[in-house]
Image 1 (cartoon, rainbow, N blue to C red):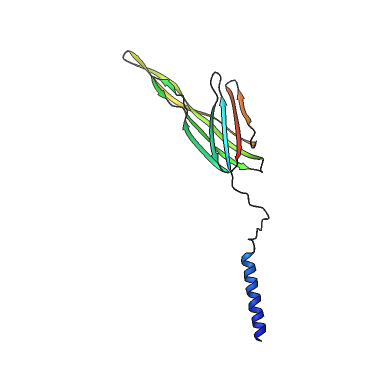
Image 2 (cartoon, rainbow, N blue to C red):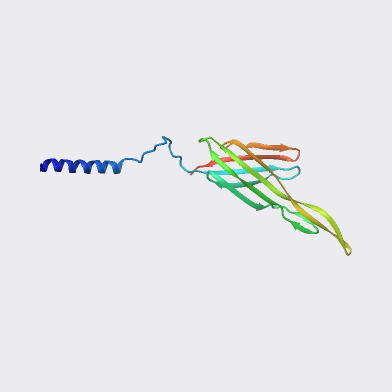
Length: 163
């Protein structure tokens, strides 16, 4: 009887040790992806200007950048800033491509009226939001032209950052 009790106790210990060393089960059958960083660069050209760009380092998911453009517009001898907005969502489809949904926009000041107070007239202004919202497939490491017209061209490069 003692030998059967010892055998059962030994069997329980072996089973417990085996259960602890077994890898966790994956009921979905999918393999987990290693997290990665992606550099997203959007570049635009305008007639008679140097190319301009924004870069964001992100993982998969949402990103959002609000900043001020280097050059401003003068109204009433005051520098009026132009704000830039770059936001979106990146989803990697495989090691070579992903789906990018993005918004690239800016505020543009414009004169709404002129009032004369004394010898110099003063202009009032408002700001209008303009931009591009689009979804498309990107091939990592290859620039994609996403918009072009007589005002210039916008391209996007998404690059997988290696460790």
